[in-house]
Image 1 (cartoon, rainbow, N blue to C red):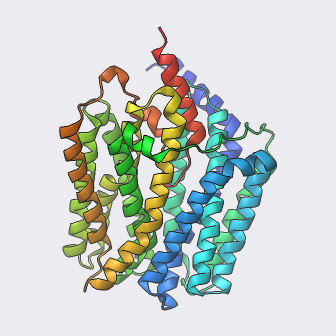
Image 2 (cartoon, rainbow, N blue to C red):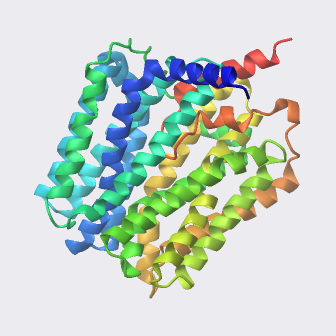
Image 3 (cartoon, helix red, strand yellow):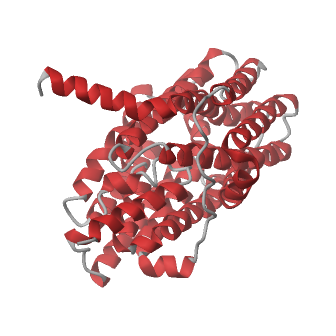
Length: 432
């Protein structure tokens, strides 16, 4: 590539990001606070003598609230608009962060986590619909790739911030609240016009399963496994002798492992039957989960390395499952498929923390990753069975992983509007 090409590429990137620069700054501050809070709360819960089941229940309520937010978010946007809705949800989330520190009661925390989950679902709708509206078919992949990089980077930073102070102090809760509150400022003063309201979620789960059993079960499995992970992994790290800084490193290693593996798995899935890649990723997550349970011990570097392998296997499964479902969907079904899979994920994520907590209470060792290994192993078995029941999708009928990932950038995000853009792209590609 010559210098002129490089300058043109840089100009194109700046042109693509300029309309969403304020939004990306808001995203960075918001998700940094969320990353800190997500790691802090389980650690503080242990310090307050909450049981594993009570901490797991808080994860359940978060994803219940998230699911409700996915359904109600478009209606809130239609009433308040994107900027005012973002500011309202960020303000409410900031308040709940402080209430955790002021009233450390397990069931009150569960209710607060439900409110937080609802708020973040609506915030993600605002964020991703805005990104989609301000991007074009030519640069949407670039815009969402930058968004994903920002997302994973700041969540990792937030997780590492848990070592700044004692989890029993007020400081970390105050920092969480400050980050979330300040995230509203860039959007409050932006000169960019707001996008159109997001479309309401429409989902027929029976039809969704018929369209893609592997996509349906894959997203449910991700919910069951990763919902439990986000709620309980800090407890596992603590049980293995890590201090708060070590817990942050462990969580960050898993997220970074998933980030690094996302695109290699995706590129491979564009070349072979995507179900084989789902099997490979889930099998890696299963083996890493069992290794974490029985072999890692309290060795920090072993925990970080195996944790990264776990993330490399577990984190891409959602996007792979969505991509496989989109392969089987008609263009006019894209919104329904993406929205339905999100609800399936949310339902699984709501049940996962409680199920994992109950399993841990019956076993004489930290069993979180035994639970996730069972989920991933069951997914491997189901996909192997489906290979015998249904042939591969013809190459010309596939949606590329990059396009599909626009609708599944993170495990806990909405994709309704992004899914609409994929449907338009697939429609245009099929026209003679």
